[in-house]
Amino acid sequence: MLIHGGKVYTQIVKHCSIKEFLPIIKGHADSDAVIYSDGCRIYDGQVNYGYKKHYRVKHDHNVFDDGTNHINGIENFWGLCKVRLVKFRDVHKLTFYLYI
Image (cartoon, rainbow, N blue to C red):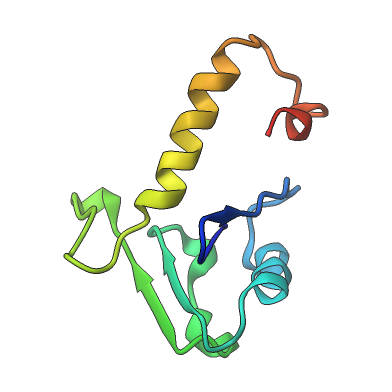
């Protein structure tokens, strides 16, 4: 999660589900926050959970930026992480968080 001001929050989750993600989002984003996400299903229904401003960037439809809505900041973060992690070959999932 990229928070306004350039701070990144990461957390390893066991299951990629709304049930697991919602408490994380609620713990780090106020209900009046503007949420930008990709098209992943776990972000479905954010409006139902009190987030009135939720915009999706649908990469599967070749939409990466509509002029104002984008997720380039977090995409850049993970791009840099991937480049850095390549140097450490075979990072085990139990120690992955130590590298981030």
